[in-house]
Amino acid sequence: RESLVRAVLGRQLANHYCPRRSEEAFLVGLLQDCGVLFLAQVLGDKYAVMRRDSQATQSSLYQMEKKLFEFDHVAAASVIMEQWSLPELLAEPIRNHHRRGQSYPSTTEHVQLRQIAYFTGTVSLNKVESFSQEDFVLADYCRTTFGLDKKDNRKLLANAQQEYSSMAQLFAGIVPEE
Image 1 (cartoon, helix red, strand yellow):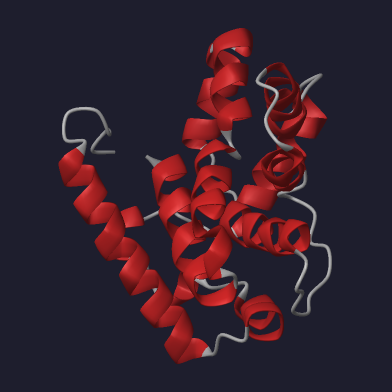
Image 2: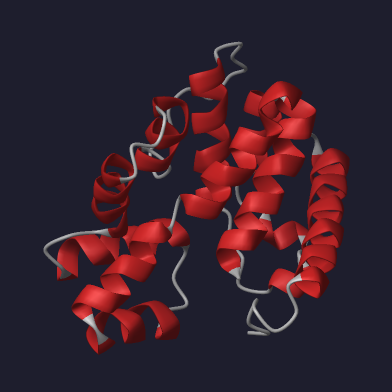
């Protein structure tokens, strides 16, 4: 479910920031945490319980993974991206979605997708159905990088929530409720 939300949020942000790459931003958001599913399969309950029971931010979870396990979800996703021969335009933002990078607007598509991936990979999605301004701990990054003020942030989240709800209905029975 979170992957779909991150995908929708990425597309909504790209519609504003780099409209030509909105579908690539969707794919990056959808796939950036594919390593989580892989690690849950490989490492089993210890990993799944850590992810499920943690109230930590995405960045804190990533740091916890690096501390507790031999591999983290970014390393796992990197292997998956290589195995799938994903184009570098998609693979690079996925491999780097926990690295902040430049915090000012860019015209380079790789950089734009990486900036979107950082945002979508860092924003807290603890309550997908009720996005709030509290979820925007990255407000300054949004302002300096994407030119979004608080009102724009709220509109972005509302649009993403609406698109997610429509997609969740479309995939009813496939996308988990919680």
